Image (tube, rainbow, N blue to C red):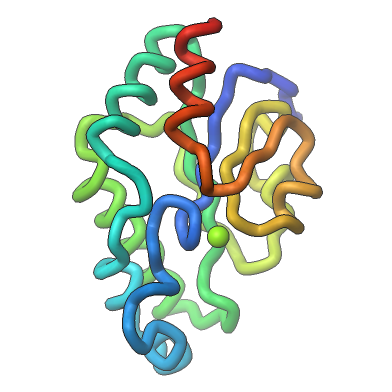
Length: 154
Ligand SMILES: [Mg+2]
């Protein structure tokens, strides 16, 4: 059963908070089932500010989650490695944030169906994911500003 709780905030990773596509040779490495680019991806926002805002929003009752796709070509061992790399990246860059939900799902999975509260907010660089989402959806450009306003107004 899906709940339409609106006090939820989800983040895509690649291209939204993790700059996967800026890692040199990322596509070739993914095609060769090498998880390294997921580990090496640089951050796209100031992570200490993001952590502070997310922890503030958590105290206001927000559910904080990650909803991210695996690599395009499914491969069981590689999928496990990618999941580990993504979790490691989150622990490395957002160590103070305790996520309520982390969903790392097959490429192409509708994100609204992968999470508990699709009536919440999604940050995602892909237009298709934003269109499919049930709640409010934003691209990667103003994450901190949007969260700042949210933390002030709730
Ligand atoms: Mg993305």
